[in-house]
Length: 319
Image (tube, rainbow, N blue to C red):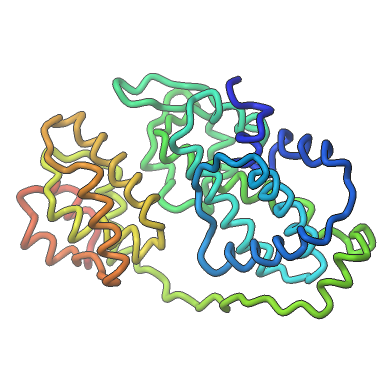
């Protein structure tokens, strides 16, 4: 496949066999500079996530791949399972964002890396992927908004759009990254163990979030899975953008991609809409900057009832 085995592919998916090949090609000698990179990498991942941006400089791509390897060793030496979980989540999210916009062959190849059999399916004008019912269940329980009831089924096969397949793979990638961690200290380089002893990581303790009430926001999840004829600007800035960014905790680019996927879904009902990507990105950034919350179900009925599907609005009680 195009990209497999390349440095660019390994940079996007540092857990892959392609990345391991590049590490092996470096000769396996210990380099202390990667420990400092690993420290910075862990701090960034835990505090704010990792940007999923393309990079043109080959040496920086190699440094990223090596910092991933050294981060695994350093996290193991520290013995902090909470940091391991948060780091794995950040790395998996980064890779899944690349997957959401990658070509079909790349998605299928990563699926193979993770032991999943993914194929492409027919979804009209929208690209879709298929995965077996059992494999879907194995990786969807921890993923947000991937309830089986919201997916299309066909003779034991689940059909997923780009965004939902990326979400499913995010969970599989997280499990892959966490497998084998922590590495037993006896198997770690002596330099890594010694470096960890006096290391003070600048990481914020994860605040305990108040559980999101399904009664309060479940209707928005249902809305995002059901196309409507009129995607009004106010639905984006008053409901979808603040919900995805400030309730679900998505980054601006991820939220923008999710809303644009929803708009494409809505175009199957009515192709006419003035909502574009620039507008959606602006509203997501604005919602994050202001910390705004989405409308309640009751308020949404008052302002947007004519634009939204009544069955969705009435489907969740006590909103």
